[in-house]
Length: 154
Image 1 (cartoon, rainbow, N blue to C red):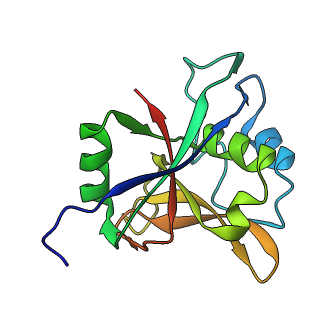
Image 2: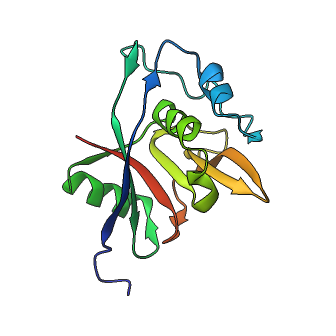
Image 3: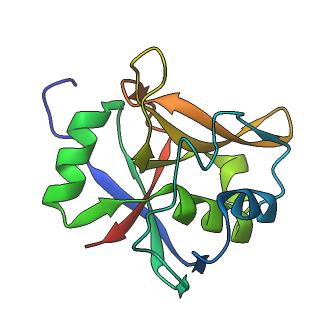
């Protein structure tokens, strides 16, 4: 099981609008999350200065048929012509499709920051007993076969 290449499975395509004129706090508020990790701030996750206006990319939700670590996942995505989603894209996805994170975690590996402990957490939309969360998980995490990843065609 460990030695064979995990299969990349496309779950669906979702049109989104990412409004880079909004602050990160406004993007978070648009998602109406019940809980937001206090480390998800514009200081830790600044919006790139080269982004402006609204963009309308097609989000692609992917998953793998087995547990997978982040580095292997990133190599497969790159080889298959995908880039990972970023925090603004994830928040736009979560605001438009709030039910998606109730079924499965949705992870954006394209935005991370280095915490005080030296680890590099990424943002994940998930659910706790009926409550929608925007939370952080470590890139070193070994992702479940049930996890979903936000991606875009290069």
